[in-house]
Length: 470
Image (cartoon, rainbow, N blue to C red):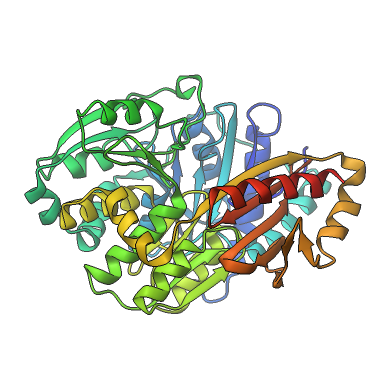
């Protein structure tokens, strides 16, 4: 059996090579043994879900069978469901946890297993380390399970949509969207968001044009990721004047993609800053904002304008979620496209993020780009970029040692502060910075750059590439 390791959002692997029914069963047994050790647990219910990938339901049933044999009561969603919907179901049904078969925005040949705690948040590293230890022991003992024929195990099912819709209606001002009579293009990427984002918008009377709202486990041959490339069709449609904005979701609807009135794709960094601005200014919410280390300081500048405190966490929504559970947080998010708000699940929710942006446009009667430009008159512009730089495996350790030594300069830019919360982040004069994080699965280093001008962005990009090549 292959080694099973949980990354920033669960265990993922290639279907039939790494992600097999035997591996799913042993991973689930490792989770079951962890759950059995939770002291004074009041529930034995485990929420089970899956996305639109190949064999998603069958993998989920295989896990449910193992949980049932371990003394738990698995309850399966009645169809593929968004990750944030499963997170909400865990809370609404007071379950002990949840298992979701999803590889999120990864290519179609991947499948994943994501374990969430009883509060709906992604499992913390301390928890996944215990589960990994359990799995390794089970593999060493050649643990096996006498299973039913694949897909034939019967499990209680439920419809998670009504409870989730009730929750979203508490958080979003649908009346504002209704009054605005909006025209919106919605990119569903063959994923779990269909019947969720589109249905909620249609209920407001908005004119909705849907893209890729049918089931397709191959995602049309593309990554189900609502980045600039994935949202290109929507951008073109909006640019033609047929819609005033575009909203998109990834394969499991936890990440978002936003297209402005002129067809411009907005970065998640910009959307997080806009969400903070809207919830503080237009909704009067109080609390702090939380972002990950490589997320834009544009969030910090908007927070300063609004008198809001900023928290910085390592990469991974599990860290954001933990903080959101411990103190009032208006909004939390990360540059990779995850966002949640106060009073909601401590998990990424692309449906919520899209609806918030529609609400902002409806409330102010301006495009998102116009609102950003008005903000930038006070904060100045921000130019952010992430580049992946391939490195030779044999030089990786030496390079990381050098990056972690505390450099005094990045190219010609003086280092003012060195942060090691996650990877290596160097703060430079004038609210500019660079950060480096090594990939845990590939021979490359991710380099995050933020500058206050295009020329500085170019110079920092060149300096970072030179540094990583030396």
